[in-house]
Length: 58
Image 1 (cartoon, rainbow, N blue to C red):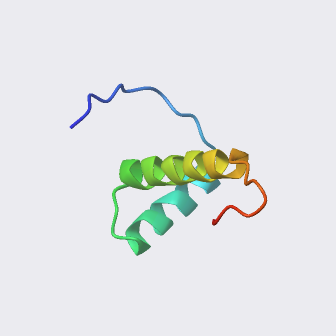
Image 2 (tube, rainbow, N blue to C red):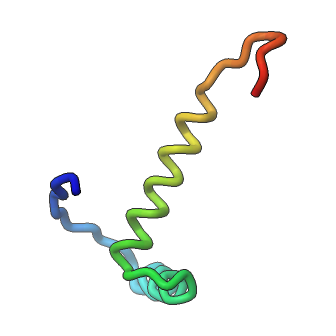
């Protein structure tokens, strides 16, 4: 497993509660949920940058 670097994340209490509930619904830890959401956002951002040339299969 890749080394992970800890850091402090400040969020308002309402957002934290929503993330905790969401994590429970997805059977993840709060940390795991935040990592998942960040990974998905990065993946979507990278895919959005991908240029498709005419005639190229997606």
